[in-house]
Structures are given as C-alpha cells and as structure tokens.
Length: 146
Image (cartoon, rainbow, N blue to C red):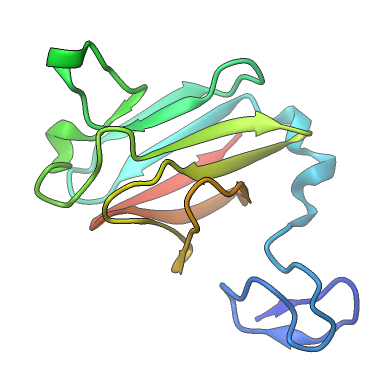
C-alpha cells in the first residue's frame, strides 16, 4: 500500500491518483535526494544482463533497439536481449533528468511501456522511483537509480 501525502488515505501500489482527494500518488519523496543521482542501472531479467549509464540533464538515456541502417544506437540497446521478439520498438522510451528528478517517457512505442505494472501514456513524463520494474513491450527490466 502507498499513503497519499495530501490526505493520508492508503491506496494499492501502482495507483496514479488518490481516490479520496485526487492528488498524484506517482510522485515520490525522492525529490530531495534526486540531485544526488548520477547513474541509472538496468537489469534485463530475461538475459540477466546489467548496464549502468550516467544520468545527465543535457542528454537523455535512449532505450530501444539498434537500427544500423539508420545509424541509430540507443544507450540501452535491447536488441540482443530479445527486444525484437518481445516487442521493443527502436525508439521505445527514454530516461531523462529534469527538474531535480529522473523521469521515464514512452516514445509512442508500438507495444507500450509499463512502470511498476502501470501502463504509461505516450510522451508523458513519469517520475522514476529509486528502484522499480519496467516493461518495454514484453521485456521486463529492473531499474535502480544511484
């Protein structure tokens, strides 16, 4: 359960808005420590591969599949992790550091992006928790911020 910081009502984990007062439940208490985050760690569950990438306010971490014909190489390339078979788009999602927090944005992917079981709306910014489970299409990935 997660507690609404506005009215104190408990809600099921993954709920985006409080049923009582309508406050966002997706924002976390991480804002005060977010500026300490320098890296994002990915653990791809199907392959067991780990990747650590720097967080930058000037350049987002692109997530998807490589497209050599177009010269596109995302920072988190899920091609060799079964990305094509699991429905990962070439330009699937991105992680960026903005306004003292890390956010995840689905890039109009064909098969969707999920954060802790909640499907994200394309082109909307969702605050990332310090750790969580992502799904790009059918490919599950754990994420950790440090």
